[in-house]
Amino acid sequence: MPEVPDSLDSAEMARSFAERIFSKYPNTTESLKWLKENGAEFITRVVDFNAVVAKLNEVIENPSSVNEQYRGEIDQLVSVAGGHIPMLQEAEFETNEKFRHSPALKAFFQGKREFGWADEEYDPNRPARSAMGIFLEGYGRYVGLRLTKEPEQVAKIQKAFVYAFEAVLLAEHPNSELLGDIREWIKGDADKFSEPIRQLLK
View: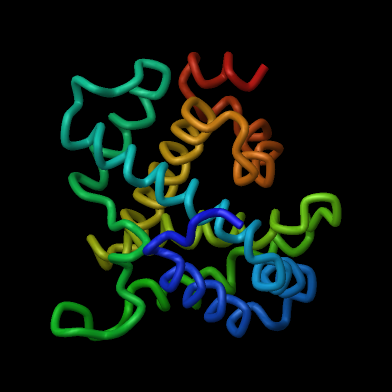
């Protein structure tokens, strides 16, 4: 089994919350349960997820270090979200003095109304696919909700985060199981990416 990352507790908290919130979506629930039952697979995806967020923060803080393949996606993310993106272990799943309502939980509850596509596109050959789809989109929503209450701006931040995340994942982790889960969705959105990323998708 891979080394257990510091972020695993936060990831499991998110997985557990999502399993309850999306309980009316049978395929998504099955996908979330599969991650719990297959610990090594879950850890592998958590490690890659946090590695991508760490890379996003690295290039946001030091733009000269950005890989030109995904500069366009990073620039778009910075233009709407600004600075630091929370790592998994920094995610606010509880209320605190800053947030009356946990932005992470709010993201999942909002996603319950919008992420039904993940249930419809469940793939038994990639059982983590639906879970990782809602997790990535939900995390983008969470990043937006930390910064603004304006729905349109939240949506822009969510979209920019997801595209930047996917671009970095594709360029830096081409053999990732997480990439395998969501690659078909990325290819379906190929026209939304910069030319270097579109080339990687061919």
